[in-house]
Image 1 (cartoon, rainbow, N blue to C red):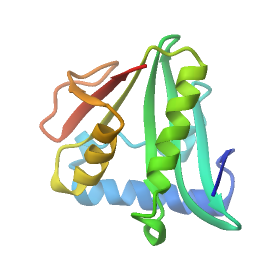
Image 2 (image 1 turned 90 degrees about the vertical axis):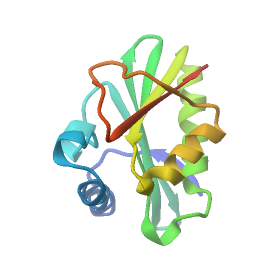
Image 3 (image 1 turned 180 degrees about the horizontal axis):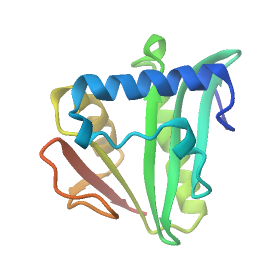
Length: 151
């Protein structure tokens, strides 16, 4: 598996982001969906990576700079064909290394509070993320949980 910065123009990544957004609509009410569409992922404060094995897209993840010392994990998604094969783990490791290289002191994220998000919350907890209050522009929401990790 190799991870590369993605310019978000390929059809494979467009389909994976569509799958990601659709999955959010199945598990979260519209006001609690914080996943970003392709146009928002192209923002200059966001770096987006995709994970590949040959020509197969395995997953993706992004890092948004909130300020010079604080980053946010965004758009973590594994292609349904590659679930539970370590893709998300490797992508999260990559994002954490990049955040440290940038000099961030903290890395935070928002994810769902519903059962469908248990695997994501477990992954983040395994990497040392702890539950916290909302950060940046987020507000308390019973459908969201917020996690952070000191770097």
